[in-house]
Image 1 (cartoon, rainbow, N blue to C red):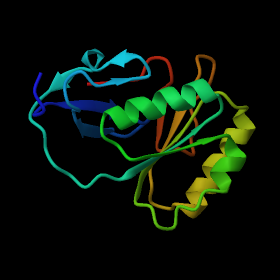
Image 2 (cartoon, rainbow, N blue to C red):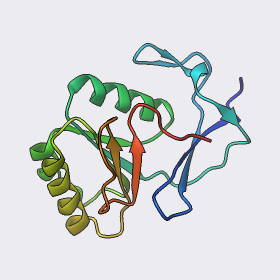
Image 3 (cartoon, rainbow, N blue to C red):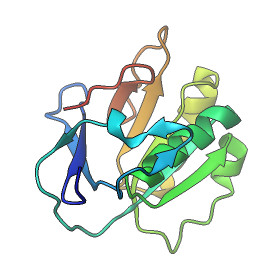
Image 4 (tube, one colour):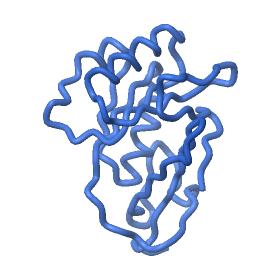
Length: 153
């Protein structure tokens, strides 16, 4: 496996064609959270793009660190926070935010309020809500993605 490989993941929103993220793959043998880089599906040549920051809000420390490690393994700048209060206290005025990901382990009302907050503060930034098995989709987000079985291509 060479460094000229990339990983691609597509997120699909209801009524939308979807949105794909591509990452340059890290050097061979790099590990994150005990996960071997070989678990990621590789395809196509690497392309250089300006990287935007992923803002990740999670409600369990283990999920927060595992997702952050995976995203960083894939070459993304990540700002990770534990809980809605910490998310509201973020200073993102100097960050080039490309997407906000809201985890699935908080009550629906709390996540709805956080979605509204990010909609007001980061107007044009896509918001992805991760869904638990019993969750229904959020109409206020750009994308809804099952947390335990995301669609990847």
